[in-house]
Image (cartoon, rainbow, N blue to C red; front, side, top):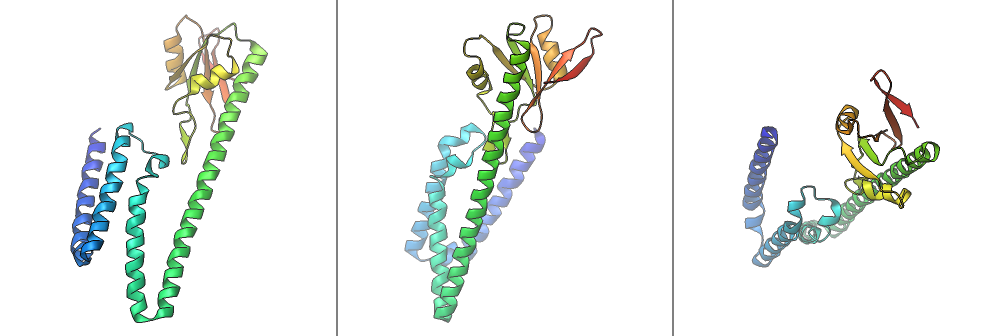
Length: 227
């Protein structure tokens, strides 16, 4: 907790210094109408994010509207760069502006491809989870355990979310006619400790999204039982 507070404090200090630097070297040199655009863009960015700050983790989909403010600032500074370069040479201005646009589009393309890869990998992990759980119950039945304990639940893969919520819903889709309770725990030992004598089944996620069931043998030892 103290480390997080320290990091947040250092981040605010760095942000404050950057704002002072930007104000002295950039903002003061802008024309009146350009300052108005920058102020509007910054306020638009902040106000658009305010409703989502309470969620803790702000994913990219929450920043779509707010990014419009950053786009305004980017467009303004691209115009300033173009105006500066065209005063030197027309062809230099066109070439420089073209390179900047190509660089920006390339970054966006690479980011888009990364996000697509992340979501594909997340989908494969979700599919592996469903297949493993269905396989477990197809072979061992559902009557012996109405309570499931899941360990090492994957929350996200890169920019893609897997099971931040919805694990119980995914389980229900496999067995809609069964009253199965789902619990997420931190470790296999904790799962068996919570379970006690009430019964249940403990599954731990592998890195690929598949499951390994853990059992307690007659000697009280907790061992994995591959599905």
